[in-house]
Length: 391
Figure (tube, rainbow, N blue to C red):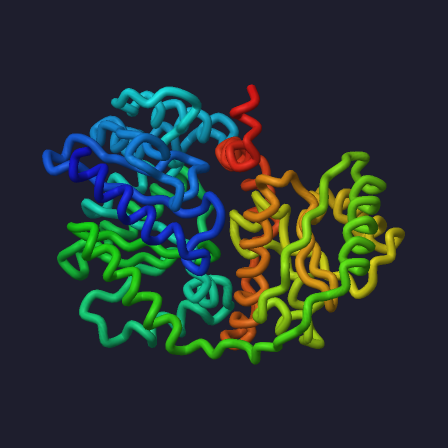
């Protein structure tokens, strides 16, 4: 295994096994070869922790990837035409012996303009700021002693336009500081670190996590005994029936044992208000269909009405439910359900933290519509559920 691929597997596995850094198939990584001709990058929909030297990545030609972001004509296309064209061109840039449906990450052209090793994560402690109304100001204070501060990237639709925006911002940063940013913090999205070596990139991740954690106080944890099995069974049954009555589709419902942070969230008087805010980021929207639904008691008719109301507004029905006193329930296939539970458990903490920094900053209706109609995200969700493997 060559060094670039070995480094890619290393940074992916080290960061991917920590659910406070990345959840499900989120995040991505890349490493460029020493000759500057190729870049090994995570395959779309692959969980970082699952990458091996045999699977979970693609090798792309850097010149072909860079030609995508340099093509001015792409920016003139409607998103519905532009984004599939970008996906096709990134596939054409692949130069390896990988078979199957694996695609290079949709952010490959963004990775191409950065340093040799790139790690993109969705850390819980970073999300506390990127999903807060005053988050940028707090981040600037946290990093004010750094000679080369992080680059803050205002929210932009993911894909080609985000890569174009970051290319412009990186160019401006380089003019000001004489080098590319080592850390980028993306509003309503997550963290990018980029360095010359895998070890340096991992050190940067640890440094950012330490700084961002310094301003956060963990919610008062509550230890609760396990709920009665009959209550869990009753809640599963009520949610399953409500989802079927609202959508006409059957989904198995899984229960996930309550962690102390989730127990602390359920004890809050404003829990329902915090969950009333829309999806915080693309992953919560793609995998969980938005924020979890808060349920005080498992009344099938009430749950059905709320799900139906979402559908009438043109939204997707909630896939995650937090039942007071019980915990997280997920209506989804058995493969996707744990991913949704991970994302939901992190989301409730982010919502608590964001209150300290001016309130929650969530995706707008327009931003949600773009993501819901983006084929690349639909493909990623299908990979997680295993749908593509069945075809």
